[in-house]
Length: 274
Image (cartoon, rainbow, N blue to C red):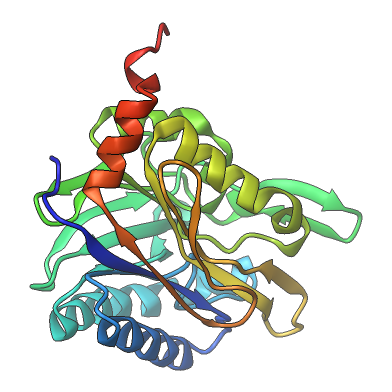
């Protein structure tokens, strides 16, 4: 569903830690700041409510799940915004959790939710490896999209999904105009891949990319380091907003006329042969 007029959107960049109350308060203040700047849509990063070890996240999932949906619904309603809830752990079978992203409307109603399907099992260096699948259950591999006449078509994803272009093509085929990619990208990979991958997803799908992010060091031992640079990128690949390396927000206009202009100039989505 094509939206009729442009609106301001804001990506939040956080340095989330292991204290749920502190993280929710920080998120609230950033959302408040974005709303004061006129943002109609505000997005939080992956694991905005808790960012420590995977086992700790698993143990905190019950408490987080009881509090975060109400926080998102109440905050969206308080400020009259669409609020994209980054991601947070939700209990799943066999002691694992889903890594869930959700979108709420200005009435505090849940519009769509998505459980991350691509899990981050990588060995970057001898002293830096991740096994997300040990604790996280993948969601169903189906596009998660919400469309309305105010904000257009929003396609949900989370972090590591960014490396799988076929999922974003499915989102675009389903009507997504804006690709939501809340992340906690590692410093090691972020410094070489983050901007390139975000631009690629925007350009190849002629869509906006909306990417909140984590930044800095996290956890009890401060042994996890994320890249930062929360971004909003337009369908041509131009960076409209970049939060840099400190916690904060970045704002930009989402413009349906720009979307139409780029898709008319390079109608690659219509030229596909496969």
